[in-house]
Structures are given as C-alpha cells and as structure tokens.
Image (tube, rainbow, N blue to C red; front, side, top):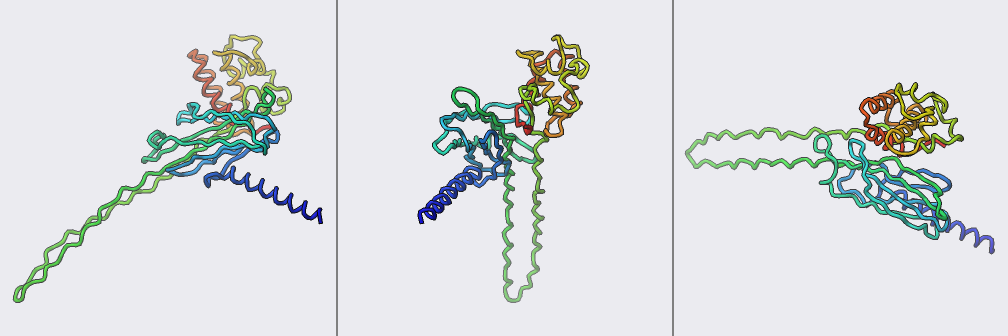
Length: 308
C-alpha cells in the first residue's frame, strides 16, 4: 500500500515539472526554440507575427544549485549591427530554474520593411556562473517579430434616394453614378530572415579537441596563403591567427579564421560563404580598416554553435 502511494506521489511531481517546463517553453502562446548544454536547457521565442508582442519569456531549466544565470539580449538591426537591449542576472531557484521577461519597445521604434511592414529582431545569450567560474555558455538563434500594416478603411457610398412622380407626370430617372470599385490591397509576404544564425567562436576553433571539426583547412595552413594577404604577425598559421589576443589586426585575424571555419563547415549554418570571408579579409588589409570587418565576423561568430 505504501509503495502505491509513493508511486502516485512521484507521478504527481513529474506532472508538475512537465507542466512547468511547458509554461516556460510556450509563454505567451509563442512556440519556443531551445538548446541543452551540460544539463542546462535554454528556452527562447521563435519568430512569429504580432503587432502587440510579449512580454515574452526567456527561461532556463536544469541549473545547478547556487548558480547564477547572466542573460544578455541584443537587438539585431537590418545591417546586422547588434546593441544590447536587456542585461539581467538571476540566481537559480530551488527547482533549478530561472526566467526573464522581455518587454518589447513600441512599434514606432521597430525597423521599417517593404509595404509598411514593421519588424524587430533579437538574439539572446546566457552565461551560467557556478562558484565564481563559468559553468556553461549558451547562445540562442535570432528571432524576429513582424507586424503587417492594417488596410485603410474604404467609404461605402450611400444609396441614391428615388423620388415618386406625382400623378400625370412622367419622370425620367436621373442617371446615378456607378461607384468605382474599391481597390484592394495586394497582400505582401514578409521576406524570410537572412540565412545564418549559427556560428562558433574563435575560442571554440582554437581548442585541440575541436580540431576534428575543421573542414577543408588545417591548423598548420598558412594564414597569408589562405587569405592572400601580407600579415604583420609571425608565425602566421591559421591556428596562430585564431589564437591571437588584442585588438586591431589581431582581433580581425582571430575572427576571420573562425568565420572561415564556420563557412567551410557543413554543420554550421553561417551567414557568409568561404569566398565572402576571404574577400572581406583582403578588403580589410587593403583599406587598413580591421575594426569594421572584425565586427561583421564577430556578430556572426558569437551567435549559436551547433557543433559539439
């Protein structure tokens, strides 16, 4: 009898946890994307259409006891510029969960699209800290909320009154204007978000246990030969490039190698092709503007790494 009661109690607890997970993953009726790392699952909204979105829920489950979840949500503009929109930290609760509410700005601050369409795009990332050291870092893919313009109302013409002729009179009916048909708005399809949304950081590619993820290139390949440039640092293998510290050319080099490997990997849905990466690097060396090219690569490298 006691075993039966205990089994029923465990079923009840499991049901509560399952409902709790669903409430996080589908907050506000929006289907959520998710990824799991080191036992921690990160939930964020998927793209959807709404002129009155949110607040949306971003949540984590499976957090270690006494850990802290540090969330940063960046707004992504059409030119892929990223600006921090929300930055918040929370301690894991007793059930190993943490949740954050994202309140959207008014639609007057959204990005204008074709035919009056409005949209706003965000990209989340989370760093879980345990005992003062990073425990796991997780990045979610971008999500976009779109808003279609309301069609303008059309006036309905009032009927023309008819007059009854008096006896003995023949009335010739007055011609009535036939109202022109009201034009209807041609529906516009919101263009799909640009390809990409995945990328692994220089820190991933420089690790020896990730060398088996390099496709088409080797850590010992020459940086100058691969990109067709004259680098100022030496030695200059691809591994030397991705491990460089500091700013300027060094920062561009490490993100250029990471972008090259992301583009050549069949397992990463990266925004640039290999030839795009090489052309951008050559243009950076030709102009000396390493910072702008580094920023382009960094914005894509720091999204979401699907590789193990």
